[in-house]
Amino acid sequence: MSSTPTLAYIGLGSNLSEPLAQVQAAIHEITNITQINVMRVSSLYLSKPMGPQDQGDYINAVLALETSLSAIKLLDALQAIENEAGRVRKENRWGARVLDLDILLFGAEIINNPRLTIPHYGIKEREFVLTPLAEIAPNLILPGGESVKVLSQDIANNAMVKLS
Ligand code: ROI
Image 1 (cartoon, protein in one colour):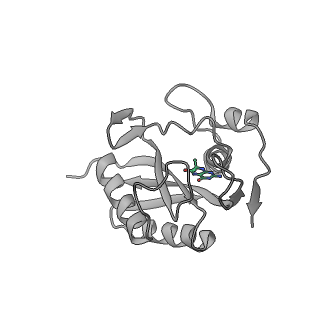
Image 2 (spheres, protein in one colour; image 1 turned 30 degrees about the vertical axis):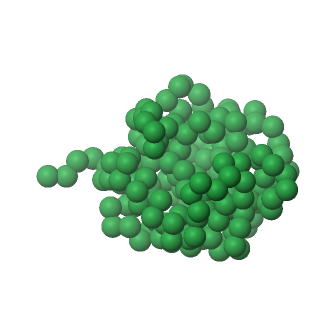
Image 3 (cartoon, helix red, strand yellow; image 1 turned 90 degrees about the horizontal axis):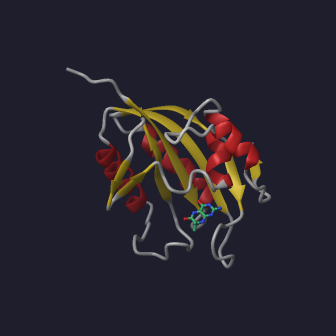
């Protein structure tokens, strides 16, 4: 018996230890997971840090995947990739990080538990999430009814650069 896979969106970010290579390697690792089919990958973007400014610029991207995993199992798989990359959990919430993999959306699910808040609380306010998300899913409507394309057109511009 196989159930319908869930379409999920993942935000990727890094500003330590060769951020570009970190994000590219993470995309590769996610693609290699048996229960995951990566459907679309956005361009990579160079973004100014949100939060304290005494940290390097970030590489950000968003990808769309289909998976038979539950949201928590997907989180486990993504955290294993973060840990492998040398991510130290407990590190400053607003500080530099080797690799951040956030589940932005998981189908139409709304999840609020200590490990997982979905939709991700930052989607609507973060240019480095909205712009790549709108690139790969312009017609997406958030569970709250907002259009990703409209949100991305309205978000304040913070000198983000699209690479390649
Ligand atoms: N700033 C940018 N530009 N990109 C990120 O991925 C990012 N991630 C974070 C904080 C520290 C909020 N700032 C960020 O966790």
